[in-house]
Amino acid sequence: MKSKISILFLLFAFMTFAAAAQSADTAKEKEVWVPSKSIPVTEHYAGGQEAMYKFIDKQIQYPALARKNRVQGECIISFTLNEDGSTSGFKVLKNAGAGTGEEALRIAKMLKFKAPGPGFGMLASVPIMFKL
Image (tube, rainbow, N blue to C red; front, side, top):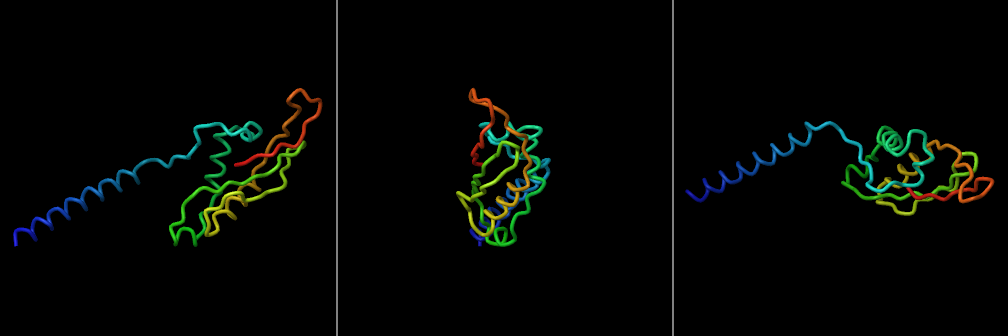
């Protein structure tokens, strides 16, 4: 009898700590994840890296299938930034599955960049390939 009561007490204590940890996480203001290393494509986005990640966070709609199956992971998209600032040649290089790659591709196609301009000692700009 004493062992059953002690097990119930431990279970209750564990549930209390778990509930407190969850409520502390939800009380925080929503933060936008920004990688620690600067990605070169952000140099050509109006507003820079932080503005680009805020736009992505605002536009992203996590696929229902991925949410249902608890799919998490990284999706990497490659594309070409043309001389006039337009983008082309979109490809999903790494896909977490359950529609996450398609959503990442949709968001990448919505991004608007500035024209890169001349660089590397050239007189005219050239298309630049990026991974995001």
